[in-house]
Image 1 (cartoon, one colour):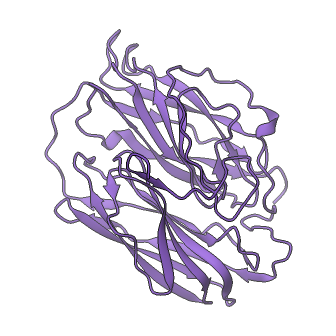
Image 2 (cartoon, one colour):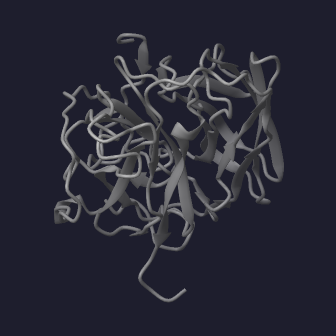
Image 3 (tube, rainbow, N blue to C red):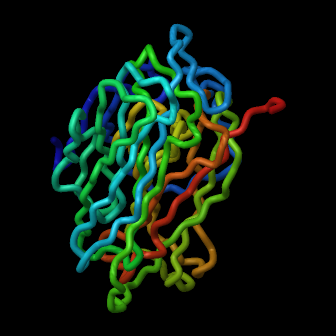
Length: 355
């Protein structure tokens, strides 16, 4: 554990050879520069061909056992603004049982922590990455050694809402897949393996406003599965900005990667730090971008734009794949309600062939 951060160091970063479980905690200095868009990402940033191209399937040449895993979850209710338990359902639609390892990954929402790992009969739980900071997600793994046919299991996960959480709570994600070291099972359809879950809380009194009103937007662009990386522009706004009067300190923009996507090393903007990296396409990585001060100094509707490279790994589902991100002020900058500061972003996984 480093400064309240726990991570399981069992993986390499993007571009490393695939292994069962890989993670890497990288420390890098934060920069302060707005990156111009349109720069080509080096060809070496193309996705590593780790799996096959049939839509929604994973290639393992020695695999004959076809399973069909899925997950879903209900919405959690923060009673009295305290705790909420989300019932995550993991299952196998197939008439064939999974014989190798499979696991649920839970990505915690911003401004909520998990005090105790889930307890499930026949499964083991652990932290892949744990960070108690309110604007950083953690990653939990619940592992099963095989999974029965035509069966569902409920995994209860209890979250505690943190002080100063947004009036509309952020969402979390659940991902249920075969593990990277599973050489006996193939998931026949990966379009049902990811679920976003939300929360409800009682309305809060309007907090006093700060000097900032930060939010972001990004376009929903297509990425070719197994192709070269593409730069996704993120536009950062300060709705409280006035001419020559913007944020005084850098803002933190934190996100986890969508299903089957990576942030390649080549083309990363200054100020982007890897908090947790995992080379498994079914396990998200977590990044933080330091957005330079001065947001809103050209007015509330003029953004600072920074491009971040993403690549879509082959073998994933052809669909719109999403994750969550949040921008928060630091230093002397404050924001009364952070509801507008968080939402999901995503990209469309496509292939250049007839379907």
